[in-house]
Length: 194
Ligand SMILES: Cc1cc2nc3c(=O)[nH]c(=O)nc-3n(C[C@H](O)[C@H](O)[C@H](O)COP(=O)(O)OP(=O)(O)OC[C@H]3O[C@@H](n4cnc5c(N)ncnc54)[C@H](O)[C@@H]3O)c2cc1C
Image 1 (cartoon, rainbow, N blue to C red):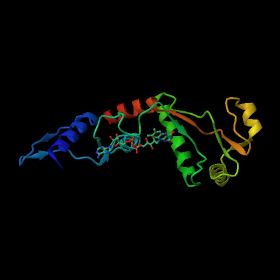
Image 2: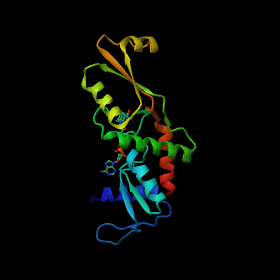
Image 3: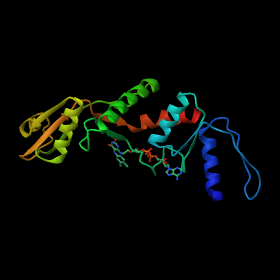
Image 4: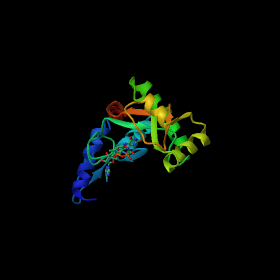
């Protein structure tokens, strides 16, 4: 580990873990650090909530990041993220997404903020295409509530959209969107305290 990396990581630990006592001596001198039950590398979407979860189980956790999250060099920045259950990619994603939804709502209650808004989501694609077929399959396998909308129905319910003939809509009512700043702020501040 180069000198710069050690310094950057120690600085980050100091930022995210309260009461840490770190002494660092480089070039042959003594290195002394506190011990932790778990170390989380990368404090973006996954890492910050991993810290929270581990700390909530009573573990002493330290987190490392190259930068000070939230920052714009990772995937966690922005205003919103789409949240969906009936993944077109594969039905195996569905239980993971369902559990993620439960956790977003639980964290929302704990943080006192609406992190996940289940507004519903309209998917539109060629009626015979893989995208629509994949969503339908995920919904059937895991009994996710969806509504199939022919083109005329899409046009009348959502006049902003004018899909061509041969397309189909699937409305998934448990899908929605995540408020990224609302998700990030309490997660990062709580992670610091933890
Ligand atoms: C533009 C965009 C739109 C997206 N839209 C959606 C969407 O609508 N719905 C959806 O579900 N998902 C969406 N995603 C994906 C979702 O945002 C990511 O899957 C999620 O944020 C990834 O979280 P992460 O913790 O893995 O990564 P990040 O949030 O990027 O966190 C990784 C952290 O690791 C740190 N790090 C990296 N390397 C090191 C290192 N060597 N040492 C120390 N720290 C390091 C980084 O600085 C960063 O803070 C989108 C992503 C992008 C970029």
